[in-house]
Image (cartoon, rainbow, N blue to C red; front, top):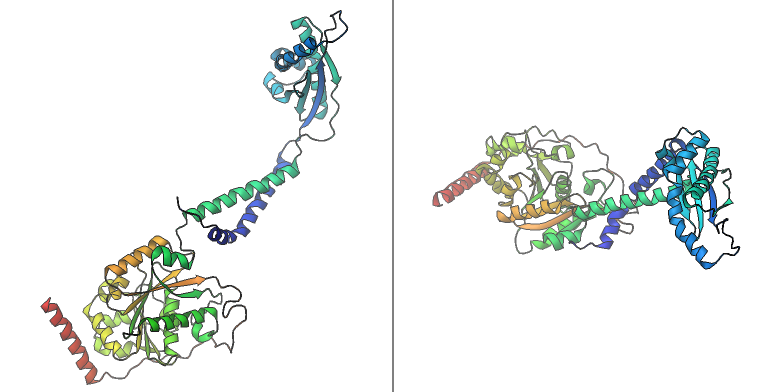
Length: 484
């Protein structure tokens, strides 16, 4: 059985507090509706009798044997009270429109503390009828005992009196019980969901259970701003991206870091957000950065940077890559350029796995300091696995409380199988706490308007030197294939 981390469960449980309260209130509402509208008020009337010395016995004193005898008779007498012999006579006496079974359910007999005292309780929807039935049951019972046992040892202590309030009016108790049941059920459901929930809940899970280093923690930002590093540079998430950039630079001290693939296990984990902001972060250091949208199916970098994207990577790969400059878009951010995804092709994986794509990346590496590839999610697709084999580093973006552990494990195995150099995991959508850098203190500086200036396509002609580089790269790859 998997060990339960109580602290982890408490943090998970807190997210459902509001839902648990709602469930408890719903149960209370149901109880109130039932008690006030649906439930029929019932009234209880009771007659108390005692078994005494037989009136026909000439001995005037009661001895111990008489008491023991009466106590033994209590059990038998209790059965006789609810017998058909007694109850059918009561129905006849009071002219009740009851069947035997109906009256049987209304009558109960209790022995008082193992004594010779018996209490006959009648519960009925009509208070007056309950009194009549209780008193008549005692009367008929006494008569039948005299006939059966030929003794007269039944004496009424208290006759039934008219009850003033329903005996089944327990609304306060029912409310407390409803709260308890609602709390127990909802809390139990939360525990079950927690126990079987496969999602990654914290950074420690990634490092200890998945075995991947966490190279950045990106805190959740509720502003909905995609280009956060540019527009909100002092936000906690923006600082997290800069930390990612720094960690990448330190991880490649002995080797040049030119191409970085950013992927994820599943859609909607934030890989495009991380890709765009990491590209901005590198550009702000003075490096010449190219952001390639390699998610040819659902890439959204053209929407993030507000460019048309009609001509993009897919269009370039099915045409002459010598004219790659016509597919590169400028952005309003200095040193940052983009190749959008382009038109949706019928064969994205084949395009990315083509020699043209490999040659294109080699050429672009000569003209840019850093190339960031925004890849497709790994789940069910081979696109990022193809790219992972030809880039310097691969980063996996995982959403805390969103990514299943099994999916991240499969992503890790898939990338490792093709020899990808996994730099680590970016833990996205962490909850920022008060006191966290940039959280709770607002943002510094003026906000940059969302509207961006028109983008211009880089249209300069490719020099003959670049053409020679393309042809040389193609020849190198062809010779390598021939040797194999």
